[in-house]
Length: 467
Image (cartoon, rainbow, N blue to C red; front, side):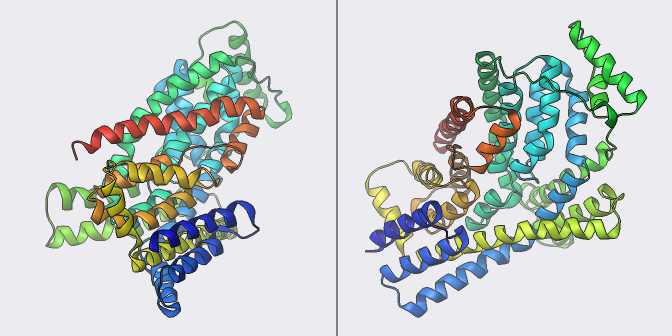
């Protein structure tokens, strides 16, 4: 009966999200109540499981989500994200401009939603494509995938952050292993989009520059760059930086510090407790304080507001913070509702029953999160909602399955990438800002969001034999 209730509840959830006018938050709550009642829980017990599951989830990650959204908003509005892209360009060199774009997205998407990140960096992608005469299928596609990979695998983006909370995974460990898995996936993406770029050379933008927006000195830089490009001369990193010289951007040090400082603090706590094995005393207490996600991200918020956004006046800073919290509110409620669903599933004992059934089928346990992530993502466009829902479903099963929580979390997050097509807002962001038609985007972008998770799944299946 419990399994039947779960099937009905998930089917109802998919229907409500995909076909009805009901948003994901009430849809998750409704499905949680239906699952509880059909599983045989008393009405009051069902409501108790819903509210406790909601509250327990927000206890662990609610504040973190709010701080993360503020950090991302200021990073975007101050131009810090664009400055990071230009800095990476100078480090790597112009011959690998496509890799530079991908790496920019790879880093930017750790605190910033991939949709916003692509909008921020898409103009840079078009400029690089125009000057290097490389297809936007390569430049825009690789930028999109760089953003996409870390958005799904590296906290503090809300999806993997929620999964880490559901599975009780140390956040520093999850960040480390998420980054480690992301590296080979990015390498595959470089190869894949270079192949796609050769197949679609027609997407090279011819951009007209609004010369009225530049000073005479800046126009000299732009004209020099265009002349060098026409003569097929090698361009320098300084040439590329000149393209965006009209915009005043914050320093690279401050831009990177906004991301790297909280990561360093979280890693410091992980190093003290897991590598050094120090769990008591003053050092452990200090590391636990500064390395907690709440404090680490609060430090990042202070850096963003008072240093990165130092040119903002008080009213502007407050306006941007409030806008970020407006976005955070939706994420918090959907995440909490996912916790409510998990609370009901746990109270009904459905997770244990499913785990025992899967074990009886002799299916390798690593396939459970891989399949759950894919099946939840296909009918809906939100990868974050799929991660939250999948995390709430799988959390009660982990103990019975005997699956390493980090491995399970990575498997779930990875497969909720698959696939990105017309029901996904990010599909349209990549398609429209890159200038693709829908057919081309389906043949390149959507296909890549299947290939990358398949490659990652193979890596995790191999890893499961050793963990």
